[in-house]
Every structure is written in structure tokens, then in C-alpha cells.
Figure 1 (tube, helix red, strand yellow):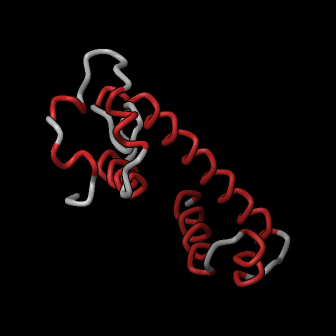
Figure 2 (figure 1 turned 45 degrees about the vertical axis):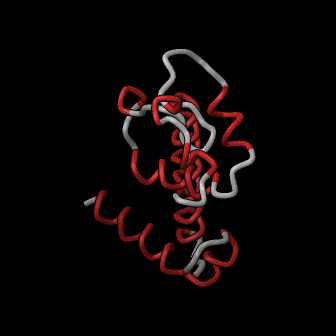
Length: 118
């Protein structure tokens, strides 16, 4: 956080009442912008838009909520692909290489699905 461009900026700026783009412009040149976005995602988790506040990593709450939805749908699609490949008899290492995940992820997806089906 000390390397962030916003470290010396008034904190109120990051919680604008309107769509003020000043914080977004400040974030554009920040060397830790990606880490800030990741921190916000971890902090907010899967909470809904009413629980997201301020600008983090150059993104307003609405933009972060949309990104969270897209990530969740992408994960669901990936998990479905893993399950389809497993149903066709592929092993965890083959599936992992094909989908671009670790074989541990393949085992986790299969285990989670087995538990939810029971």
C-alpha cells in the first residue's frame, strides 16, 4: 500500500457521491493497481453491489460487481468442462493439462460435485 499512488491522497476522494473519474485517472498510472484490484476482490468476496463501496484499482463498485459475476460464470463453465471430461473417462492430469488448471483443482471440482449430489 505504501507504493500506491493514492497513499497520500485524501481518502474521501475514493468514495465519490457521483461518477467522478478523478480516482480512476489517479489509478491509471499506479504501479500496484493490479494488487489493489485483487485486494478488493478478496475483501469483497461474492457480496452484492449494495455492499461494495468506493473505487479500488480504478474500478467503481458497479464495475467490480460485474467483474465478480463474470469471474463466477467463467469458473462455473470451467468446472462444467472438467466434469464433462471426467465423465468421458479422462484422468485428472489429462484434464488439468487440457483445461489449464492443476490436477488438485480437478479433484476439488469432482469432490465438490459429488458432495452436492449426495
